Image (tube, rainbow, N blue to C red; front, side, top):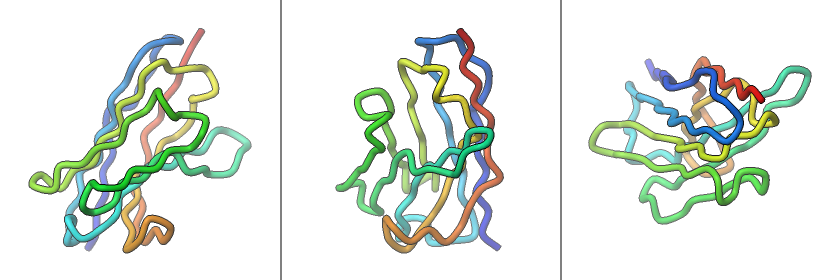
Length: 118
């Protein structure tokens, strides 16, 4: 059974930083692309960042480029999202996802809430 468990969310002031973590189990982690999506209240879920299984490729939504960094540790079956310069529009539930390819997402975590206050 595949499990993706996010952690690290919380309340932060505008301009602050958070680091999200996702612990994966039940899958050949090093063979999967990993990603982060988010969903704000009343909005559709949107792509935030993705990283290939080899870490050679990373992709970001335009809205987070230069502020967010995705990374992974295949030895620990974990993926991370370092978020700097947080803004109110970053407030959302953040979901970890694993996929066979960077645009095919097979598994999802339960999400972690990030709230940015001014």
